[in-house]
Length: 249
Image 1 (cartoon, rainbow, N blue to C red):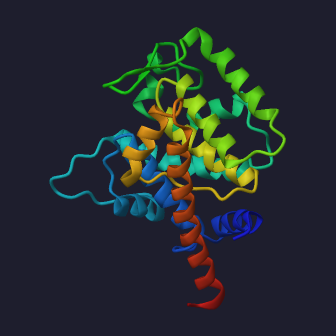
Image 2: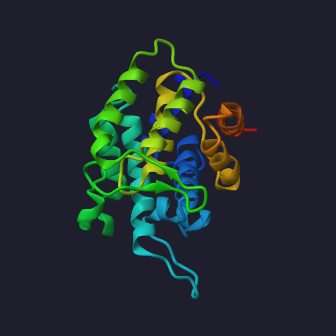
Image 3: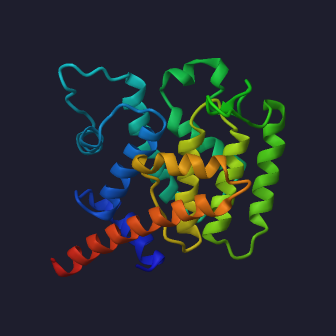
């Protein structure tokens, strides 16, 4: 599918509010998988129910954190924000706003240590075993600025450039929370902006994705191959949906 056509379908289908189209699939699957990767407890069916009805009925023995529900709904809003800003260059203000949308009305927003609406003020790390150090809070503004400047200089952005940006963004880890979800949304957005097939990192592929990030400095190909696999999966599904829509088969 041509990416211009995909962008058009996502924008038009958002307005239609019909179920079972590319926009519906992208919203539900992106929100479910990206939150699940970060430890979210909502199932795919529950995610779809929330997207369609703004509510869901939990199982009798199920405990759901209110933040899980709020962040799921916020992820839907974040995806729409991505579509609304496709004509705008990626900027520091946009990245901050993306995190703010994701964390709006959560307990983190009420907790000053997370500094929602700004960059982190407390040091953070990636992982519990084989811990990866990230940018110090006092360096985040400079590091993000340099990363965006370096990215903006690229004349013809490739999928490899977007993956490289993602790795460096996650290494900075600019926010108190929500770095992975914002980072993956940026990749989806930048793919659409640069006429590259976007993708959704599936929770089932989390081990490969995390291994790719961890080893990226020494072996870029592993993460690149993982992302290209996710691209193929997403492209197959959207092509199948479009074919069914056009031909009824």
